Image 1 (cartoon, rainbow, N blue to C red):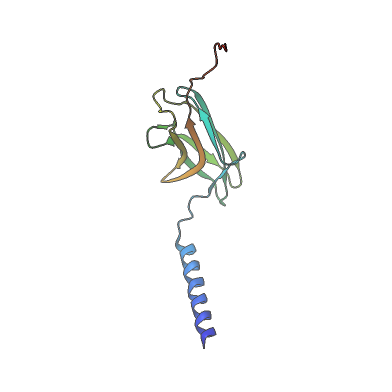
Image 2 (cartoon, rainbow, N blue to C red):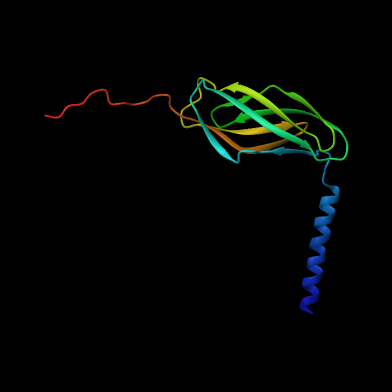
Length: 144
């Protein structure tokens, strides 16, 4: 008897998952390639940065997307310039954005890389951490 209930619950869950997949919006067939893994990049205020992202159309028809990036944190944020991406099925393309960390970005603050495309977004595991440009060195010393 218990086996029948377990089987019934399993089938119900399976049907729910199938229904969810069937009605989920899969209109965006755009995927991202991350060639270097997830990381935190240390930058000083005012330092330049470069973001390169490779996209792929995993769909079966050609598609066009308006893509942009932003670095978003609690104390500072910065957006790139939107770019249009047009890809055939299976085609890949790399887009690049160049920017400069705000000069007033506080030391020890962080901002996460977010990719915006059409009405969607994806938070990537890339972070900029602001470090101090100050460096301490020993100028002289003595011992008597």
